[in-house]
Length: 130
Image 1 (cartoon, rainbow, N blue to C red):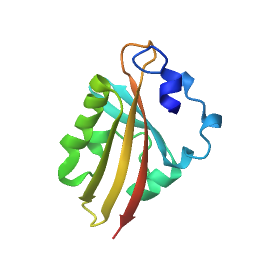
Image 2 (image 1 turned 180 degrees about the horizontal axis):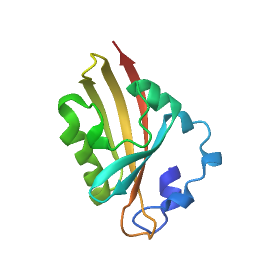
Image 3 (image 1 turned 120 degrees about the vertical axis):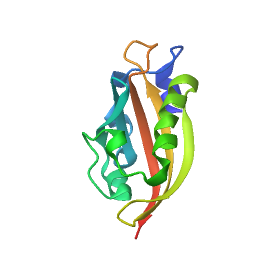
C-alpha cells in the first residue's frame, strides 16, 4: 500500500518519494538495491536483514554474495520486478558456511524518472540458523 501510494500513475515511485520517517517500524528489514550497469549493488541494508543473512552486505554486488545454488534465480527476480512490478517469494537455501536461511522477500521497483527502473526497495522477514 505504501509503495502504491507513492507510485501514483508512474511505473514506479522515485527513491526520494520513500521517506524513512514514514516507515520507521519496518526499517530494520528494509534494503535498497541500485543498478550499476548490468549489476545490482546493495546500497543500504537494515540491521535485521543483515542479521538474517549473517554478514554485512552494504556495498556488495549481488553476484558476489553467497546465495548457494539460487544466485541466478535470486538475481533474476529483480529483472522480473523491473518488467512486471512488485515480486514476493519465499527462499530456502544453505550458504557455503553451512548456515541455512529461510525468508520471504519483497522487491519493489523504484525509478528516478518515473519510467526506467534504476533502484529497488526491498524487505525480508525470516530466519537464519546453523
